[in-house]
Amino acid sequence: MRLLALIACGLLTSGLMAGSASAAGADDDAQTRYAQVEEFRIAYRTLGSGPPIVLLTRFRGTLDTWDPLFLGQLARTHRVITLDFPGVGYSSGTVPTDVGRVATLVHAFAATLGVTRYAVLGWSWGGIVAQTLLLQHPEAVSHAVLVGTAPPGPGQAAIQPLWLERALKPVNDLADEEILFFEPASDASRRAAKGSHDRIYARPDVARRIPSREAELQPFFAMADAFKKDAVGRRDLLTKSPVPMLILCGDNDPSVPATNWYPLIGRIPKGQLVVLPQSGHGPQHQYPHLSAQYIAAFMRDGS
Picture 1: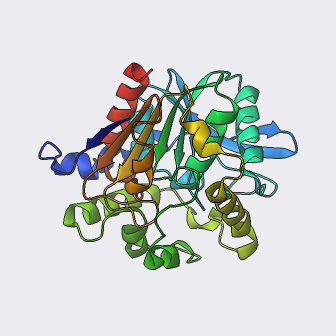
Picture 2: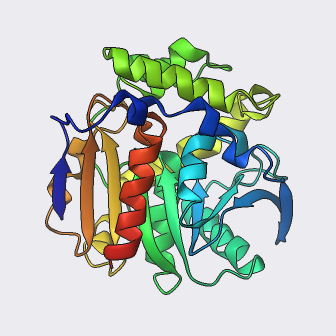
């Protein structure tokens, strides 16, 4: 696995870090559609054209909580497909408590859209699903992009209490998001946080569909706990996977630090680890242009 630690990065301008608000509306007109997958009515949006990439969002994330500038940059080279998990956001039902079941549903969802070969991008909790999906369906997953997430197995760094406290608040404001997804000690990162927040909340009623009740959150906790215990041996299977993987992290992620991946460096056959500077749990929202460029290059040359 190649480690690209971009800690000293004079090439990054403030424009790359914050993005242009005028370019933010790439998915504003993306229509919410629905696909029937078993008993679930799965909400999704699609934009752009090219090789498909299925995006799996974070804990408590919905279709609305992706930064539209990041989606728009991805859509320059790919058909971007975002979805709400069962029981979340615009989708019906309840979240399954088994991550393998969720991965199976995502694969079935893609097949319903006629997509049989695709890349997957999983952010945070969505990265848990993405790793499970690439192991269960290596014939379908061409590439995997794992953003702000952890590998399976014990020995992970503990989540910082302040981060967890903010993550469980029913509604998060900009100050919370600076801690949750950015690097509050960095002026540049705080500026990027505001830019991303403003782009996301330009869409009406975003907060209304974010899960907040304890019953809605428990399945996420159950799946994350089982993934960490790793009774089925996914950690070892990752080191044998033929799927190219790009692992994208912030250098100061208080939830799942990049150091969680260090024991696997050199063991994942087609793995690359990129650590972006002065950033936290949502590096793709701080660096929407640069992240999309890395992903496009990886999809083009990382096989």
